[in-house]
Length: 227
Length: 227
DNA sequence: ATAATAGTGTCTTTTAGACAATATCAC
DNA sequence: GTGATATTGTCTAAAAGACACTATTAT
Image (cartoon, rainbow over all chains, first blue to last red; front, side, top):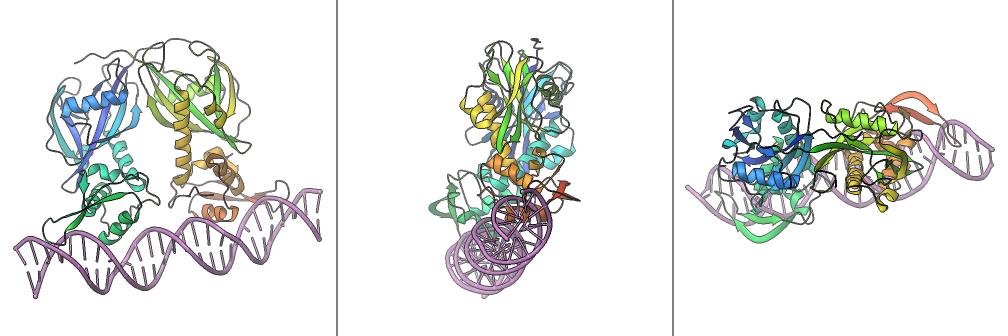
């Protein structure tokens, strides 16, 4: 058999960040049918001559104004059940992005609005298409990857303190970690953090050392998720 | 923009098994252009009304005679660079399968032949399309998943001994593990193995207890990859 | 001074890894 | 018996987790 029925191919983005101690996801108000005015993950059709990751980067910038630069982007999974899009047979390649704390998103492209929403609220409400499932998969992937990679630093500004890094873990995992053991763990993992030699003071308390992300991306042994 | 350019969507399968102490992959000889008579991963076009995983299961059975029943199947990643298929813009959703030791594969469908090949040989030779990259990604995923899941049991027959399970780890990771520490580790992980109460004797030596896979799928803490 | 946060040190429990010793088979 | 494999036990070193204690700031 040599038939190749035509499919539409889209990319959808699960863009996560930490705001006010909680994990948030970037959602748009759909500016067109189907699911007009529903909340949805940003995304859109892949163009004939671009790679999938280029399409993801472009849609992120077009629809939400979030630049790819400070953001970690990786492929999540692909969703292609017949009927997931009422218009036509559509296969969507989902990407997962970890963003630092950014200014408010702006809408653009096909989106009538773009905003950060706590993932708990997003999963409780209705999302367009099968985006609730995609979001749930993305959150689960994020939680798992914090254990054995240095990706938590992707949620931080280029320079950050150990407390800020710990706040990322606590927000994503929804636990409280012992500040002393956490500090010892991350500072004793070779190559995970690069000391800038500077400190910052934020409110009362001893000023914290300022670090950048180091070259190490894999955590051996992993951080554990216990409270 | 509301245009949705047509894409062809395929599934490709990285089917892994352990034979003679080495990790093997199931490859087909392509029966048609392009890459006629090249070795390739089994796969083919997704039909208009089937899910992606159904397409993967169908192609596996059609092209190689491998039934889905005893096989673990999970989505690996999606490959869609322009130009990866010289015929048209094609997006391929790759699936990763872990098979127990099976009889020789048979060819069928679009495949002129199907055979198990050691992954080292497969990666050293030329594979059609970008299948070398897909295979490399699949092998890496398999190696990583053995660490923190019970998926090694998917490479075993329904009933197996601790030695047979250890042989899977040694073949996939290419290391030698201490039989005593491995035995203690897997038998002390709650729910990983279900004792059948029976033993089997294979050659000289004390007969080994026979187990089935237990309900536990996540390994906490993970097995380590050291020799 | 007091409260708050940053960071270090110490102790206990758990686990990994090395390896001795025992059990049960084929021959 | 010998040799092979299975299984249990013991020991040591490393790591996790609990938590006392010190350091440095804002107020």
